[in-house]
Amino acid sequence: MSEIPIDSLLQCLVECSQKAAKIAQIFRDEEDLFGLLVERKSDIKKNKQLIQDYKTLADVLVQETIKKDVGEKFSAVKSKIQGEEQNQFQNALGESILVELTDSPDDTVSLLYKVLDGRESVAKRLASVVHSSKAMGTKEYSSSSTVPADTIGIWIDPIDSTAEYIQAKNDETEDHDIQTYGLKCVCVLIGAYSIQTGNPIIGVINQPFYKKLEASSEWENKFFWGINYNAETASSITWNEEDKERTKVIVISSSESDELQDVMRTKYTVIHAAGAGYKALLVATNKADLYILSQPNTYFWDTCGPQALLSAKGGGVV
Image (cartoon, rainbow, N blue to C red; front, side):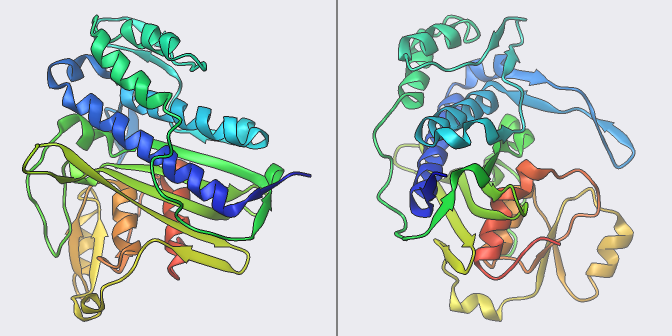
């Protein structure tokens, strides 16, 4: 039975998240093209109403890039990598592709060209990131622990909070140091879990639009990670001492019922924020105390990575 070093798996997931963030940024740079790259999925039921659900080409390309990179590095895990999206995409002009990545950048350029309305330069930029073999960060963590390769599964949410990604709002909406909507709420979520127990053991959350640089108008991303495996816990997250003195905060979706919110407000400050991953990250980084969700509209790809971050900091999902 082959073993995977826990630090190598973490490093791979972090570097995948960095690629994902860059891909997400490139698509949003192409404002005049972006509208073509949104596909409506089947409607979902939420609060007894049918809500339109969408995916973008960025969702599909990010997911397939992560699958490719993790599968190549850890072949025993390849068949156990799952994500939110199907790998077929149709643009607004009705042109369809099946996103299957080979080892050839030229193949990827040709594939993407079909749905990018002839924008070869964009296809080449994306292919360059997808096929980059350069390490995109220093080693995050060192450990002697290993995990049996056949016991590991991966969940991916390539672009969590797709609606915010599509709308691309960049307003400063901070309340108690919490962004309530917009691109800053968009996250890439990657989680590794134990197939035997179902428990997440490694989580990575990457914010592609963490901060906009004034000098260049480019976006700076930021990632966070956590490990909780056997008796070993570690995290990139450090808490500020002054956060201990802040008001007790609950983050929720604006769709939660007025009755529930009224009850919570008797003891907490209630703040609305977009994105399941972002709200969980707020708790993991100690910007909020609780994230409450009362409706069944969050899935394994939403929770796997964030739960690992939370458990690494002594929290969890119940």
